[in-house]
Length: 75
Image (cartoon, rainbow, N blue to C red):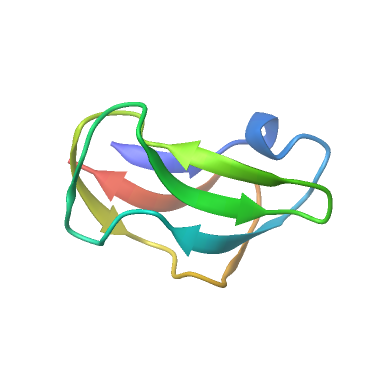
């Protein structure tokens, strides 16, 4: 399952920095677990896992992402 950063998560912002992964690439996560932090010009928000499984990063820390970007996969 794709981990997608939605426009709803970013609010009125048009982009965000993936400031930190909170879990290791390849580790097991559970649905609802905080897995990453995003930083916009106004707020810092957490991204949660949409499902349980093994996480695989698609985007590296420090990259700028736009709404509807897949940042990881959980499978």
